[in-house]
Image (cartoon, rainbow, N blue to C red; front, side, top):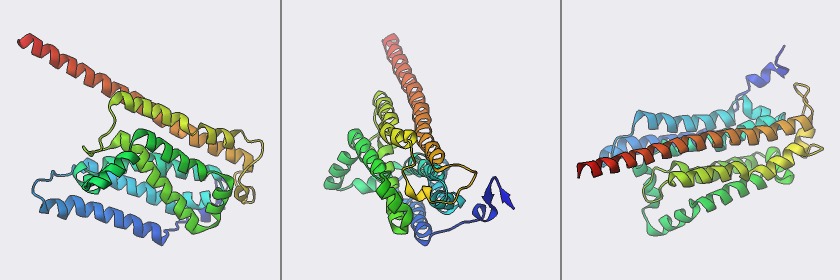
Length: 277
């Protein structure tokens, strides 16, 4: 018996890789210690809201589900398109939650020394962030590296680790909670998001409009849903580009209204001061 063309065993296949579970437990535990015991020892540190704690925890949970749930087995052994869903989750959904969920005073511990602050200012510069993310994202979609990553487990771990790291860098200029390396002002945020929405267009074009499938791993994979390797590849390209495109467009709209509200408030404040004088 099967569901939606998949063997029932696939839907029940959870594979909690030790390194994934251990790494996420370590990250979540360090976060909980930071906002709990460590904060209490420092009388001047502000409490962390439940909203922030939930956001950070959701970020780690999304990574866990992406890399251990049936989605992982689908992406590894059957569908390129499932792999693209996995990449959307670990590059576009989880990282901003992790950054927004981390209080500024805790994240700023990484930048206490002048030399580390100088390095991270260069890394988190919007131009640097765009370049770093898109180079890492693009080279791992070259057929030789992509096939290598799905063929060797530790190479796959390296790929996903670099994706998450590059995504944190990419999201920092939009989501930073740290005063020493702050988020961009609203007009520049909009420009940054627009550039990010266009940056993956080359990879998207190659993957989506190829006349033949380019990833041997999925050519040899068992067929499910009667989807051909080429259609699966095209669907994956669409998920890659449409997913990021809609998200960045949505964020541009949100940032625009925040900018408009900020400008309106500043204008109203100025008029009130003039009236009072």
